[in-house]
Image 1 (cartoon, one colour):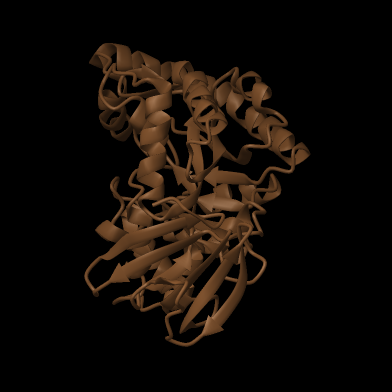
Image 2: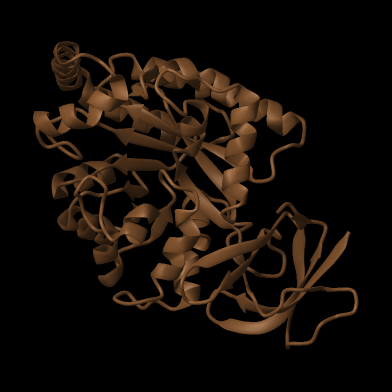
Length: 379
């Protein structure tokens, strides 16, 4: 099947040009400059045509599966709803960030892990998924059995990132016990006494098992050639520890010092797109805008709002960051694709996957009009 998309503003790696692209067998096979409209082409009416977005950290699958406290949605329905939200946001490749331990909306994340993956697999087997879905495994190093929980995924080709994280208080995202209690009370729905007991148990477990688990998980990820993300780095020491363990990504660094250190040592600095849209972190940590102004922002991920990824890219082109549009789009397409060795996508180039998004922007908010995944129109 051949498709010609014409009269578009093509956002290429280094410039924006008026032109058209030809799609054949799921690939981009021609790129031509000019404003003409082919008789057998699809007129994009002067809109931008950008590469499909690549999202390395999406919490949306879990939120769709457990939308309210103690509510679990049917797995297939949750997978399809999540896919619709992703593709409608211009995201053609997504890493679903799934936790091997922890609580969310009063639901044990370990209990919903298997049905969530089964829902995605069922949707995939029926050809019902429009985006390409991979997995990011969130590994709480303080859980005594976290290495055992990881083992069933060892060798799974869908796993593209292993995120090593420590959400217990005293460091990283939650520097005090009070911060942790305030954040986890609505997540766990436990009484104050039960939550404090769980916190103290978690701290003790982390102190006993965390360092060894960090190294064991890093070794397993390396053996599987899976990129490691160090989560919530807040100190230079955290970054140095991540580099020593072979990490490739500093995921949501919480301080300017950590972000600068990570960028300087060659780790890809990944921040949340909602942080850019809102111009601040939802928990009071480092502003992603500050990273961008200092040219230390490499990747944006949608985190908890799929629609934020495209929006944030266009925000980066405005004051005070003032990136070029190709630079901003690279942060949500080419750069994340390269970070997880998906070199066949993330750019509009001959021979690459025809993952493409038609975007209308009037200067206030970008709007997704059409989406193609591997050359097939899916939205």
